[in-house]
Length: 361
Image (cartoon, rainbow, N blue to C red; front, side, top):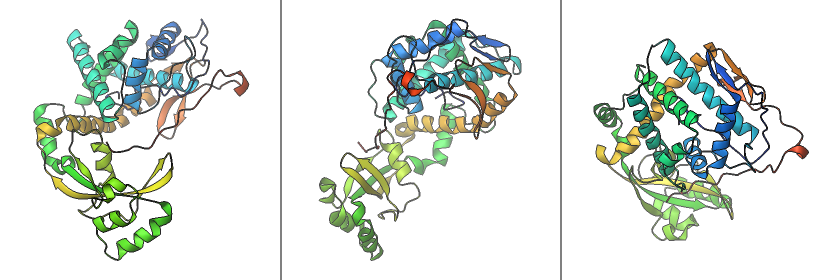
């Protein structure tokens, strides 16, 4: 994600012809312009590189797919990329003109290392398998695109560091944050019960009658392997790829108690109710938790800075060529909307990518 906003990436869903005319005006933010030809080259670079698509997908947690040929992307995806460029240009413009900060070559090198780390961590956290490395994804960008992204990323880092609500990404500050939120990084041992929707009411009655986690899992769970162990599913520390999902699923729960409201999973055989209980918590060290602490702090910093970024966009003078999108407002603030599409019969090869339910690994 971009350090100030999550919307760093395009959401390229399916394939449609997105023609940009030779006279397309590109994008302008305040006094900074990106030409139509530059934007076309950036969109083509994204479409042409599976490595870049995959790492950008991880940053946004959205599916990315190439077009049917050169310069063909979904209109919504192209508009999302333009939106990301507007965000970056807005931040860079403010940092340069108001804070009088000049991005140095050393800043650019640090920004690249930071961007590569963020890409790599997001790929790991989402259990994705990307061809190549984050460094190769960045290398797949056009030189102008790469320089712009690193400059914008560096400007975001600089602005973020100036905000009183953010946590500096220094070892001492991260350790202090960890100590204040240590229980968020405990190793969690969990038990599960995968229950048929037709059995949810009976499960609730048995739960109300005081049956234990082990009894409930043994009686109702369709996951036979864990049911034989009274629901015991495994223990997960901060380095586990599924840890963030598990942590979110059991947030606020007491030990050895299934929640009264399950999560619902859509699997190939149908929809099931998933109950997850914590059976044991064990403290972990900062060294074990550090990568996740960094990710959490970055996310918190991004949320804190999002209001500032949106305020800057409200004040910015923004122009987007109509062929690339429409600059307007929604409930979250200013953004670029996809331009109107032609009739469905004239769109080439449109297809949807549906998500799959998350599972613990």
